Amino acid sequence: MPSKIRAFMKSLHRLLPWAAALALLAAPAAAEKADRAKPMNVEADALRHDDLRQTSVFTGRVVVTKGTILIRGARVEVRQDPEGFQHGVVTAEPGQRAYFRQKREALDEYIEGEAQTIEYDGRADRVRFVGRAELRRLRGSTVSDEMTGNLITYDSTQDVYTVDGGPSGGAPAPGGRVRVTLAPRPAGAASAALAPASAASAPASAASAPRLRATSTLAAEPR
Picture 1 (cartoon, rainbow, N blue to C red):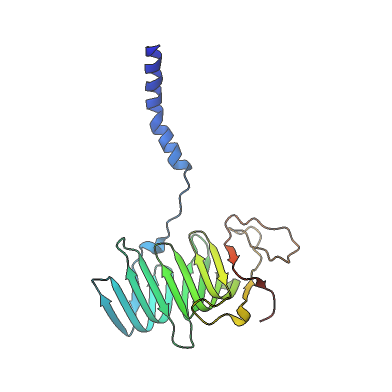
Picture 2: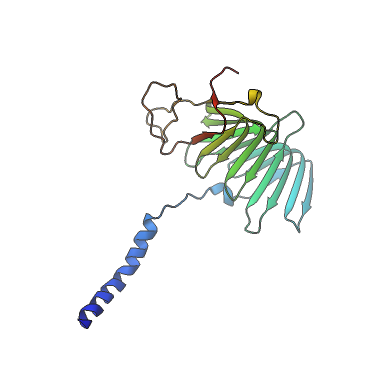
């Protein structure tokens, strides 16, 4: 009996590395966004940098590029955390809106948006559009999905939009309502479409389509 146990343990020992490798292959792996590792380039009229706090404040016609990311605003405050991730707050001129644009991973699509204030979290790959917010998804140069509200959050790691029409740090959206236009996906596209609730066609697969969550009722009223 001891010899059989020793033989079993020897076989198990040989199998353990393969089991570990299979476990790693089976584990879900989140795709790393290339923009995270790209340097941030900034043009502005003025800069105030605090090396101790790792913060930089750019003012005056600020233009920021970081990989496929493009940001424009009147004032941009950038902070770098101890792990090297960059976080930014973009503020527009009074009465204007700041601008954000980024390419979607492995697709000929862009996400672009405008708001009075834009908050970029490089660690979480999350962007918040605050005050008179508008977000659009472009396929090539064609506007596809479009949404407006007072607060829009875009989580690029999970392709999730959250839209709120109520006041949240800026002037509320007209009527405090969320307004969304979702275009149907072309047949054979890489990711499925989100069909409007009133569509009579069968729902498309949403396995890789951005998802939308709203904290206010979606409005189908004309603007």
